Every structure is written in structure tokens, then in C-alpha cells.
Length: 362
Length: 160
Image (cartoon, rainbow over all chains, first blue to last red; front, side, top):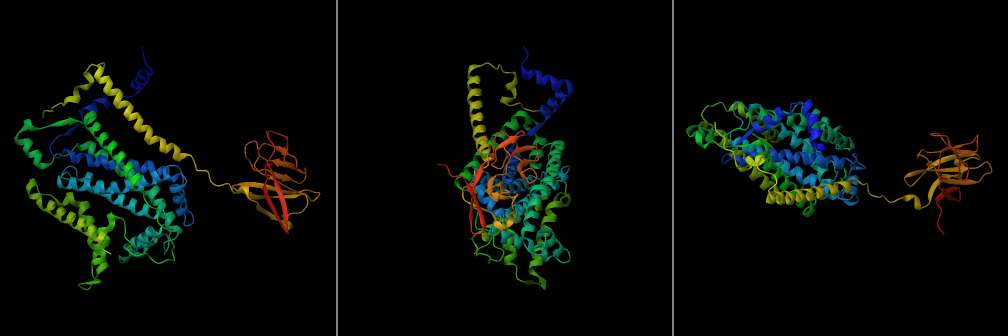
């Protein structure tokens, strides 16, 4: 008795090497040790990205870019479209959690030293993805065209304009003109829904392919323990054991997104008025807050240099160090890599402190 | 390199018909199906566009008297759809929906035939909007015309 499912399976079987794929899936193993939980963060980031793709596509059904229409169309989504509030709030919540997860994933990889040879390029593609996610956050923030997003974008595009020579052209490129207008909106909309997703698709595929190629990294400390005592080595199968655990985490995350969106729906704010004054207490999204606060605190002149310039330069250096970290860390035994962990701790502490300071400061 | 299989790794070889396993599978399966439905239902509802207020109920300024000459017509916005305002050769005003009842093209007035013509599939209506030849299945919806001063207003015919 051949069921339809068997028929379909046989049809594919005759054409593709399903046994080979199955064998590959069964061969893939995930190391099991006391730090294994950190392996879930990357998958969680990927899942939230998927949520962004789905809810973003849904928002596109009603969103209209344009200074006269953007705010009204988001208002329509929030008030008229059935479950529109849910879709938009899930998109906003998921965006914030995604950036949080991407940072958490990065720091976990950093502290577990997973970036070391041979996984340098996995790290580099991951850092580029993190920058890309920040770009998604920045470009998506303006799209509802409210006062807060209008001025945040104004300030945000003013910052790179401070860089000598390339500053002003960068501002023109980002704004599509001298000022924030409808052209800025269509431009950032284009970045948000076409250009950045295209780059992200490529980088995510590369990142996943590299992870598949090299397998999961075992932290040096655990590796040393396993080498001393080979009987202690533990692994679980990727399929189905690890996948099922990951799916369970995703399922819980989806439920949490629904709860957050229902209890704390994202507000729409007031429609942007390009000729109105900036309201008091204007702040960027939390993930830009530590940079925003730093730039606020730097004096106008430091050792004869422009303070703003110095701050931007410093963040540029931090970004470059983050990107090239695996190439800076060339020492062989793992215990001499402490300075990197120390540096990361200092930076993490600085980020957290500045974010909190920026949050409570007037 | 030794790998330690954990409990669930042995699952595929276990007999599938244990009653307790079946019960657990049914419980898990219905739970997953129910939650999938609860995720998909809002999305389905979201995709149904909201009903926007139809502005066609109020009267709409269709044209000025000077816009039209006898035996001509013009289209105007009636809510979200086009309307057709005709001044007949006798100088009477007629207004109706300009959406062909066949497949929704916008119709036009043919001064040479003194009839309303749909270019898409050669449908014909008379000056009262009645379908007289070609594929249209129903007449065009007729509207009420009011002339106030030098302005022509059109509104939906009031029931009763």
C-alpha cells in the first residue's frame, strides 16, 4: 500500500541524492559542554530576522513612503487594518530584540574565542551583519515619519557629515538632498526594503555556509580539558536533537513577541513637522544611545582637536578593531588571549554604563 | 573521538505504536496545530484590506456649467471611482457610474452615436445607462444631478 507521501518521496528519490543529504544531516554534531547554551543565540538572531522579513513584508502591503502619506499609512495600519497594531508592534519589538541578540551573540563568540583560526571570516561576516542590522534599525526608524524619528534621523545623518572631505557627500547620499525631506524618506525606504535585505541575504548565506563548513567551535578551555581527558568529550546530533531544542526556543520567542506586542504596543507619536522645533528629551534608539551620550559628553575642543571629530574617530577605531579582531589575536595558547577578553569587558561595561546614563540623563 | 548518543537519538528505531507515545504525539500535534492557527489567523485577517469610508454618498461637484456643451460629456471623481456626466444634445444632464458592469473598464460618451461605449469589449449603453448591446450584463448605476448656480452636483439616488 503506497501512500501519496511515499509516492512523492520516491519521486524525489529517483532524482536527487536524498540519502547523501540525510547522511550529512546525521553526521553533523554539536559539541555539548557547559557553555553550549551560547550556541543558541546565533540561531535566535536568525529567527528574529525571519520574523522581520515576514512582518516587514506584511507592513509593505499597506505602507506608503512619502512625506504626505507615510505617517497616515502607518496610522491606518495601527487603527484600521485588522491586527495591524500586532504586525507593526511585533516588527518593532522583534527589531529591538534582534539587535540585542546580535550583540549578545557577538560578545558570547568573543568571550568563548570562537573567532580564532580557522573561523576568522565567520567572525568578519558576523560583524558586517551586526553593522547591517544597525543600518536596518537606522533606516527603518524614519519610516513612520514622526517627530522623534525625524529629528533622530536629522542628528544621525549630521554625525557622519563631521568627517572631513567625505562628510558632506555622505550626508547628501543619506538624505538625498541637503535637508530631511520626502526624498530622504524614499531613499531610506529603498535602503530598508531593497538594498540592505539584498546584502543581508548574501551575508547570512555566507555566515551559515562558513559555520556549516567549519562546524561549531569548542571553547579553548573545554578543548584543553577534552584533550587531557578524551572520555569527557560530549556531542549531540544536530538533527534532530539540536534543531528541536532550537525550535523550542524559537517557539517561546514567538510567544514572547506576541505578549510584548499585545501588552506594550509601539506608539506612533506625532507626525513630523520639518518646520517645528525639536521636542525636549530627544533620543535615538537604545542601541545608538551609548554613542549619542559619548558625543554629548565630549568637550567641544580636546587637545586642539574638534571634540565631535575625536568621538567619531574613536568609534571608527572601535568598529575597525571589532572587524579585524581575529587578525589582531595571533597568540597561540589560549591563556595569553586575556587582553582581548579584558578589552571586551571594558567596552561592554562602557556601553552598558553609557546606555543607562543616556537613558536617565535629561 | 567518541560520541555519546542521548535518549532521543534512539527514537526512530522505537516501535511507533506504543499507546502512550501516540497520546503524547496527539497532544503535541494538536497543540502545535492550534498555535500555528493562532499565528496564521491574525495574518489572514491582516491581509483583508479595511473598508474605507465611501465618499460617494454625499454630493460631489462634478463640473461647472461652462465645462460642458450639448452632446459632450466628462468624467469626474465619485468617491473612489469615476463617474460620467453627460449633457445630451437636448441640453439635459445625466450622470451615472462610469465603471462598465462587464469587467470594470471606464466607459466613454460617443457623441457620434449618442450612446455610451466601453472600449474594452465594445459594450454599449443608452443615455439612461441601460445596457443595449455587447457583453455588459447590467445597466450602469444612475446618479441624481442637481444644478446649483453654475455648478453641477451629483449624488447617489436616495432609496425610498
